Image 1 (cartoon, rainbow, N blue to C red):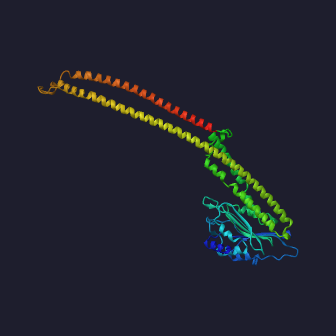
Image 2 (tube, one colour):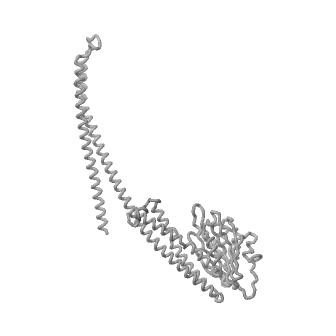
Image 3 (cartoon, one colour):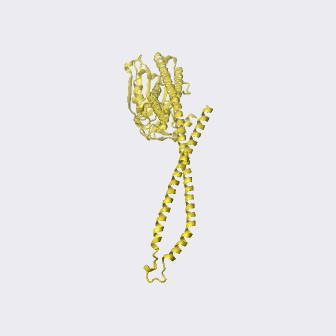
Length: 463
């Protein structure tokens, strides 16, 4: 089944080339012979490296000198293709990849982890009873920023008989692979432990960056609390929007960055793998160096676990306080919306009263027109026949009555008096309308206060 699944997934994969190098580190009982080399790996030398032939053949050692620990890796530390860590993508040709998996005794199921999300770690001993190997897969490949990947992957196989660890490692220049390789080269004989490299990668993920992220998130939270709840822990010069915009959503994303629970699980899996390795080491190879290195790594792993537990507690507290501020913010928004609704209702009531007044005014105008128009019409006819007589007049001036000027002398003052009375009445009416609007506004505010008091009373009674 393992072979069938491997071949099926291999046919599904796409190949993208990446620059490749090889690394060899060997430690001997004679420390003067220890050496580390890294050079580009061309395709013509690929099989020689896998089979340890040609320039990669095992050196002939003098009597009394033996291999204490060895590490042989195929490296792609500067992967540049954007799709290099996408699902079903290989950075080695399928034939070369298959040859590497089988020659280095790497786990065939590693090809099924190309679509994994989050930090991933798996370790187990293969089912070969004659030549058992500890197989390790560790990767974090779904990290992307501005269209570029920051992923990395590592697969190892440790031969219990020879103490040599082989494998493949790939990462981008922005990942932790370059820094971890520099640390690995300085470890010397400690490479006898196959989980040293995975622990270094875990160490870099558990470095100071998560702690600083959580501290920054807590500072953002304090400014949020100062802005929403007016808590006194923040000085005025550290106000909410003095130098930067503090966003509640951004604060949430800051806290949720690198969730500690995932790394706590990785720490548990690493500890299980370390116990599996130490129990599988033959007694003749269980020397003081391996025992000391194993104990030191266990202690460091426990330290990282406690550190992540502290980050988890700190992040949980921050999230709870953020939830409190979010609830308070929702309440403030609800109160603002309630006040706005009251204001809209008051304005609508004013509009309704204004419409009613306009309707009353129109009715008044219609009534006045109905009362005065007939009389005015008759008066015009009467005046027309009184002031003008065109039948016996030889010319137009003689047709106009001498009392025509009296009409204007009476009409103009009467009109001014009527208009003045109307203006005075209109001003008094507008003043009365203003007092009515003020009474409506006071009534709305009183209704709002009564509702808020009732809501607080109900909330206190529930508590």
